[in-house]
Image (cartoon, rainbow, N blue to C red; front, top):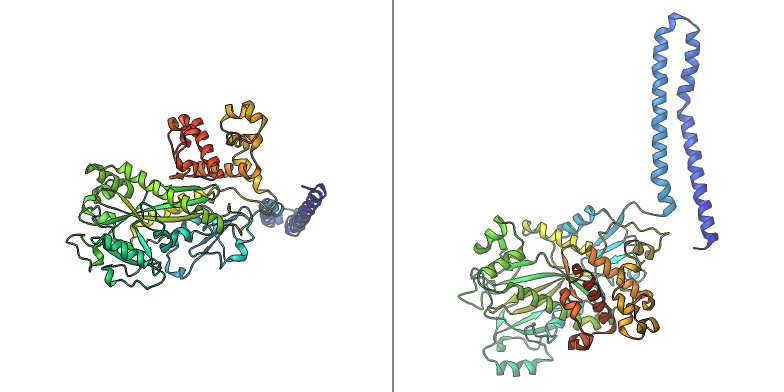
Length: 543
């Protein structure tokens, strides 16, 4: 900081303290007239002899009360100095501020979001221009365009530019990824659909749009193949059933960074929703048999799951895992497949996200939690049906979901540093705040490699680019943020860079990288390598 600026600020702070002391002194003088007046009266009464004893006691009482008032006054004013003085000098607000934005909030659908923010010490802001965190239920980049283009380093927004490439149902369904049921965009893919359906006459089809309403199995001849903005998707038949009901699995997933990519899931819990009616006997006219809607059947109402979930107080995830194990199914493979699928979606869409974010000063202000919805067939193969932006967090329909939704929000806010509790100051640089929590020493990996002659001479080799002498300011900050995410993740676990065992990390050979690893961009390779280095040093970093 410039010395003159610092000197002027110091003088201003001294003047403010002197002014406050002067005001304190004046208020004390105005309040201390009572003891001086009482002493004068006491002297005159003493000169009158015994007849003034009663009056003497009265005045003594008044005198004592006056002293008490003076002491209280001093305490209160000093408290004002302590409370307000440093706040004025440092520019700190007593509380962080969150701006919660969404339509029709009177219905209470964001109640649990408010609850969590208040519990972690945030005040609810009413000024859309003054906030530390913007939580918007809707996509905020038009409504808050000027604010988002001028974000300060400490400000956070709960959406990423370009996530429509993932959450838009048409874009996702037509991505041609192995775990997404085959889909055709209308009307341009009509010839391809007719050809494919002719080759697979046993397939059933549903027509969908972005609003996800009115889904129903139809024959190809009954579909509207000229309807723009829709897609026709293969129906997943022979689903895995529990108590004769079809269900889906919702995975709460958070994107914290792009270029390099970092993605996490809430690993401790999932959302399980069952269809309202039994799947068999199958009737394509009865959508309650195969479509999970708002009036789904919850876990605690399923006969085979109720004891595990309610009486034994397990999570939705552990309830499903226990049921699968009891029936000889591999629950570990199911969750591994889901994590792999989520990773592949983000890797395939990251170039789109990077392109959408180019017009913003930094992407470090953004994070986004979505929900991936999967169904499984009778062989436990997974199928990704959709990714929900701003997934439902209201327990208005099922009050029992209150705990789930508040844990989802709290784990998310902890992961992205919003619930960390470090107070920002307008006179304190964002870098200082980060260094206090994680310094350059905390992010060092591969010590022997960095001490080798090759890395001492040059930073050209990728093996050397994580060494202290080769780290750019931008990459160092990236590693520090990744470090804090790992420390603050609570029940979240990393999906990308992918988890590994310490044995795998130690035996990794760069020359035998998989095709997938070789396809990563440079920053993603470095991010993957850094987590591997941390895993070698400490097994808690492997997952």
